[in-house]
Structure formats: C-alpha cells, structure tokens
Length: 79
Image (cartoon, rainbow, N blue to C red):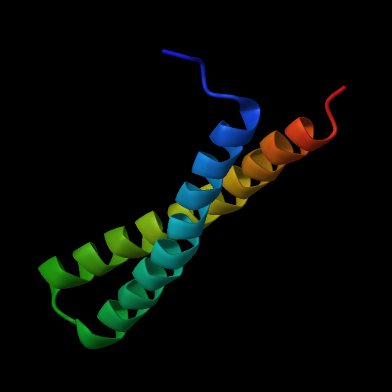
C-alpha cells in the first residue's frame, strides 16, 4: 500500500474537523439545557459532566483546527 500524501491526510483531518465543529457546540448546548432542566442530585451531576465534556471538546476542536490547517498549508507551500 502507498503511504498517504500530506494532502490526503489534510483532507481527512479537515473532514474530522468539520464533524467536531458540528458535534461540540451541540453537546455544549445540550449540557446547558440539562443544567436548566434538572435540579435533583444524580441528574445535575450528569449535566455538569456533559458540560465539562463539551468545554473540553470545544477546546480540542480549536487545537485540532490549527493542526489541520497547518498540515494543509505545509502541503501547499512545500518545496
């Protein structure tokens, strides 16, 4: 099998990044709605856990976006 080129890797990363751009705000908004809806102990802990996962996922999405565009730009401007 041939090793994938930098451009192919960049396109695959871009598709994953687009999925993260859709999923991470959805999880965060669901967590805020769950915090507003649930007031009893076990469910509110799940809402806070979901909020933490959403925040971490958004931070990872920003990091992954920079890495993705760096990969694509490295391919475009390579000698």
